[in-house]
Length: 354
Image (tube, rainbow, N blue to C red; front, side):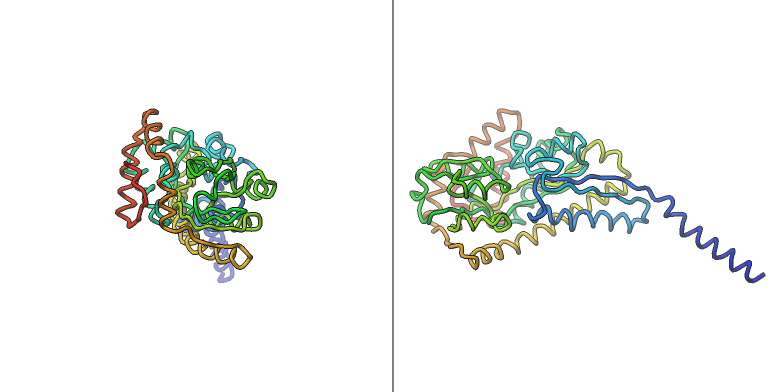
């Protein structure tokens, strides 16, 4: 009798344990990006964002489980095509680099048209996040492109890496400098010629003579080993730049269970904060590592930095006029952006509102 009772209890316990497992729903999601995991924003997507989604779903009762397919490094979507790839359903989740998709996201590229800003990654991230919430047109840019925006990221401040020593603007005369998208504006008026490129191409471009150097952020330069081909590292401090964010196919997101939607949003918050901390910490390490590897690191004087800033055309107003002509609040964004940086303690060598 006791044995039958014990067996019945064991069967009942096993059934209760098996019930939720049998009821668990598996959701297949593909996450992709044009950049490979050697870069921190993708590395943290792989090592922070995805595990955080899984962790939250497990904590919520394990009713849902995501079966992930990871497609980094352009295996599904090439750099600059991520927004279309996610909107078309080639991937469900992606990291959109807005700097390479300026025609679709002109408002998100405000930092690239106001160089010599803040080197504070957190300040830049907060500023653009607040703008996207307070200026509806900025937030709507994502949904109009078939995307649900989760969270964003900013890169550490940009410097210039060259084959030649650089101490003044005149040293750039006649040189070819690689620059991503709107960053080409940063060398206008200096005598240099901009060459289009990305982190995926800079090394070979400089090595082969397509360009003589590049404007790029330190952590990206170290990951791409650019100091090997451009050993003169001049700290210009063009500023930290908002560069994009994690998105989900809007149609797919809207159909996901609320628990999964919440897990994705919460995980993106953790990812964004974790990435900002790691990127900030990695910036100093990158410069030190390159110096130890033989790079010649120097810093442009404040006076020469101001000369450089003043030599540029009024790229911010050109941007604001262009955005306004497309029916978007360019000047509202520019004014709010500058005010936020100044309130955050940034010291700007040029007022882009003048």
